[in-house]
Length: 255
Image (cartoon, rainbow, N blue to C red):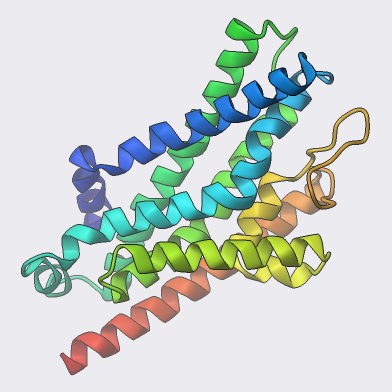
């Protein structure tokens, strides 16, 4: 699609890449260093390093970072007459929406890739962990990228209709906190929220050999749990894109 290609071209000089690089690196460094200071070692090797890196990141930081990326991607469209230029293009509104969602989702996927590379780099080069990061965390990273797509769609919609940069980010912060609370209460309804789906997915399979987990119980990474994430991501993304396209069409018609 031309819209997707156009959006990816806009990313070349975007400030979004600073978020993509800085946020996951800081979270991995913070998680690993706090573990070393408190315990002096990674008791369960790669498992400890991964859980300490992805735990708080998934429960609070990742959804908000995606919201920041969405606000950055849409910021240029709210300047001068860029909005009119965007909406007057001879393409379906759904294609415009998909272009933005694809760009934001790609940035979110890149952020997870940076986190993955940072974990492996620290584990091998700094902490000298034996072997390699377990394959289940590589699969988990792919699922996290997928789970970020409906969140990218929702935050894209918020940033499209709200000219403020901070308001969509604030909404993401509040909803992420609410979703994490629902997960802690073992309410599966949280998976119907893109924020809850992302947090849930980051925690899949994050139990240590010693039995220690993150702050709420999560299932092991399996075909069943992966299927739930995949199905929820597809349904939520399709629904959000459809609603956003209809809303933009109505708004553009009234304008």
